[in-house]
Length: 261
Image (cartoon, rainbow, N blue to C red):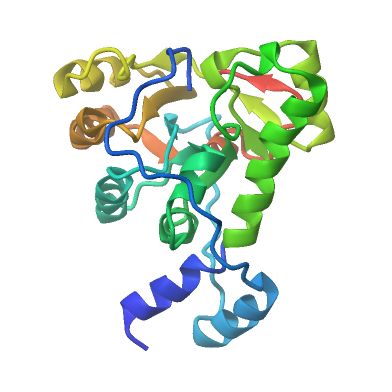
């Protein structure tokens, strides 16, 4: 089987920060979610094709200079370019996705590709409200509806979430604990939603220190344009690029809030 065909098959197996809600140009209209898949059946088929997949990654971030790059608000029209760049350099990141953006992709291809490329998926709510300002029922719906859609399309059960705008409180913490989700914030904010300048974004990301969680958004073309320089600069400083869970060496605890290692 050709390599691309295996990668395509993997897509079906695997399974914002503090900014004002950005206006997205060229946003696709939400559509009905694609047909559900059977992850277990596909897992058996892929195991026969490529035994031992997925590859296990272990990092000792107590000794290494680890940094977790995170991307919010997608997937969007610029996400494929970002994924191409990350794949070319064998870098893994964490994507905090919006349910409405996942649903807007008619084929479900993009969310499957993120998972199949080995990136971590996190819940960023359905349509980006401040979770501290919604009812208990709406809070649950925002998280659960996104969780169910992503699981149906990829087989992934997300274990991380990022509250929109970084807004959280006791009620949000309790609901995320019930849903089995750790709250992931950040300690390096590139402010890429405000300053659409690749040089500025790259410079701010380069301020990361060992254990940092860096906030960016894959819905902005200027951010995607900045990523190669971000990777070059941090790599020259000796950083290892990891997902959020890899940063901590284990699955973060549900309900707990994390900003850096």
